[in-house]
Amino acid sequence: MIDERAVQLEIPAGAEFVALARLVVSAMASAETQLSDDRVDDLKIAVSEACTNAIEAHDALETDERVLVQCWADDDHLEVRIEDRGTGFDVSNLPEHPPVTDPERLKFERGLGIPLIRALVDEVEFASSGEGTAVRLVMRHDEELDGNGLRP
Amino acid sequence: MDLGLDVSERNGYTVLAVRGEVDVYTAPRFRERLIELVSEGKHRIIIDLEGVDFLDSTGLGVLVGGLKRLRSHDGDLLLVCTQSRILKVFEITGLTKVFSIYDSVDDAVGAAS
Image 1 (tube, chains in turn brown, cyan):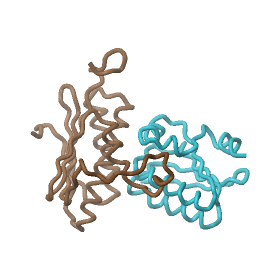
Image 2: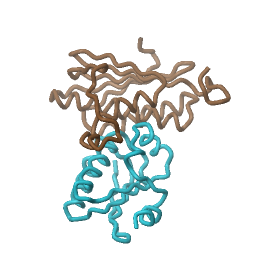
Image 3: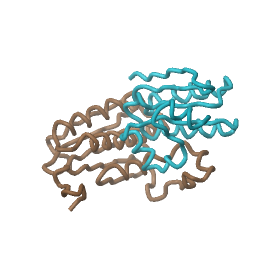
Image 4: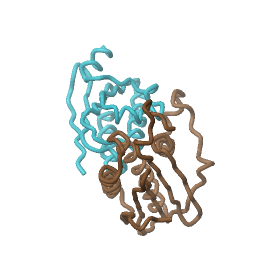
């Protein structure tokens, strides 16, 4: 359910617009939440990865449809949703790469985006079908952390 | 969005200092510059990331590709980075085990020679 206070940004599916999506989300995260600067930086990377995948999905289809970025702050978290109209992918069945310490790994310049998203945000959900992909990113407010920096 | 790519020489190493944001838009320029340097015969390269404000997996991909290219020429690719927000993406992806990362260009040159 999209909150009525959500900020919505439609970006043309061009690489030059990923920076704009990062800027809008990070400005909103800084203004509307208690996220620390480090966590805003983490969110920026996750947004960049998800928008890059969305734009590449539109590129592959040669569609000029826009990528939709929605962002809203709730009492205890910030949520970002990135939607594309690509052909979708099976997130449980991504190609496996050799471990980074294996020299063979250097043959793969890609495949690090989704692991990065998973590591950097508190929650991530991929909903993908043949008609597109929606990625939902959640960052919980830092005040929920206990004194040791751990979540209760 | 500006991406700065400044090349200099230091003790037999070519230093490529990157400034600005490295993402899907700017990474192709970074990749091209690196490929140009390698094809000019520069096989000992230090990439200075101290001026980088943002780097995502597309930037990591350029570095992985550069390392592969240089290794195929028996070369060397060293990184300079002290910024925790940039180092973090190397740590998460395990690439700290793949790259030699130094605190300064002087340290990188010193360790290599």
